[in-house]
Length: 344
Picture 1 (cartoon, rainbow, N blue to C red):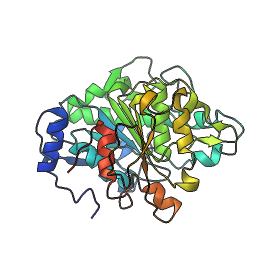
Picture 2 (picture 1 turned 30 degrees about the vertical axis):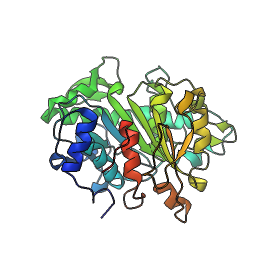
Picture 3 (picture 1 turned 45 degrees about the vertical axis):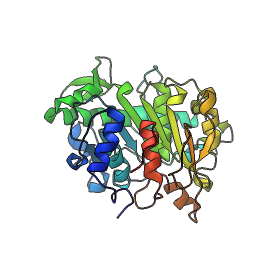
Picture 4 (picture 1 turned 135 degrees about the horizontal axis):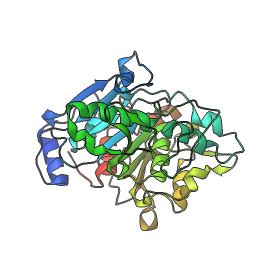
């Protein structure tokens, strides 16, 4: 049994949610629903393995005006690998989605030896928004390292999933905005875009880079980067990471292992360069050692796990992956999601 699933799911969660939102809630009512992606909209690829289904994790009342936590998995990782993180989010009162997207493209292998500082920007942009689809600032993307259309992009799949869920619960509609110019066509609502100000974008490894890029291009409630992004190459830090951010830099939060090795040795550099002022900006940019994740973050936006687990892979997974994260990681997740230090 994982560290998180061994936690009490009723009294503890009610106390946590009451502390943050001022109202009691029983986590016994948390539900997880799996949704096969192609059932949500036209043109979306079919998945046959249930581990690759979207996972929707809900506290007892979606009507309450709380942001939607969107978790983007790492390279070749299925949504099933991050169930504990989104369950923690639901314990805190947030609706949450583990989103299945096209993550077989190894972003680093495409760009780390490139001389083009826009290489990461182009491939991530295509995966997030779709090839040739203008982002919220009007910039389209195309990369030889990916092949993702609007329907199968991260944004396209999320919009389709929300529209699908809104059929049975119209409260999901609050995460969508009608937009006749949008290239994302919801099956039931037509052309729409996501209301990004109501999203907490979260990702591990490759997924954390996508979450960060999306937040650089559109204002979001919060960004949580787990062992990511590591977008550096012969050109230094990728150009997208140094560009002006649409989301305030003090709304970016990160957790990494001090020894990610080849899987994340330059994450600290990207955090320093992000948005021109660095993750956190101002007086909250210092990195804080939180041990196994349970240490006090002291208000920082940059948290560092300092437990060595014997390999780059294990260290990289220690921040997020089910069955591999450290026992203290859920404490860090709570702070990253809600900005408060809470104990169980």
